[in-house]
Length: 235
Ligand SMILES: [Zn+2]
Image (tube, rainbow, N blue to C red; front, side):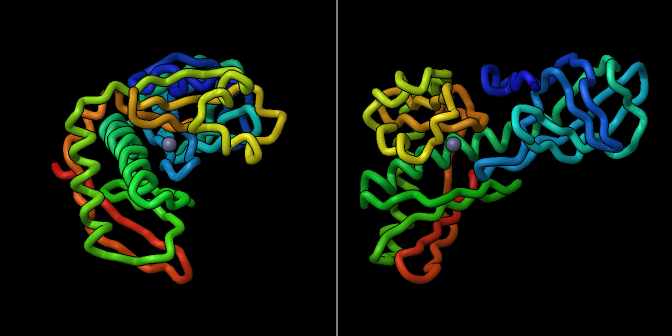
């Protein structure tokens, strides 16, 4: 079982760990700050260093309660002590994009009651999919400005891990109850104070001010009720 350090501290850039499993280039650690690809957020990359030997981490993925790190070459062994370091610029951008996704998703929900069906974060762009009958391009572009007004309020972002029953007492999360299997006992909560609460395992900035400004760049009609909005962070 890997202790997922990023759930509690999204700003952890380096850490020490012990190798617990090795399968060729796939390395499991007892603890990690590497975010594994999931929930629309891309994998972290970076390196593991043992003594002076560096191993590039090219991909991380969760398997059950373990996180597997794919490295660029073999050589690590069970019991090795390693120092991990993230490609921080890449990860920090993902954090800004991910928190921006929560803001824009909430704006879309508040404006339309549309169901958000997915999101995908890339290096320089993110997209949100939602279910809505009308497709009004101008209206979609206007949501970007609404989101920026929220972002400018410098809303603190709080991360909490709650027991299942406690989490479902939060009104925004009630509809999740049907979707999450009983086996999940703890739920990670991302709380944009006074604005939005989501169950989410991703990494986030600690205040919306760190997002800066977003720009909606494209609106797409993906067939019956399926809409997609693309946005970028303004640099
Ligand atoms: Zn999220």
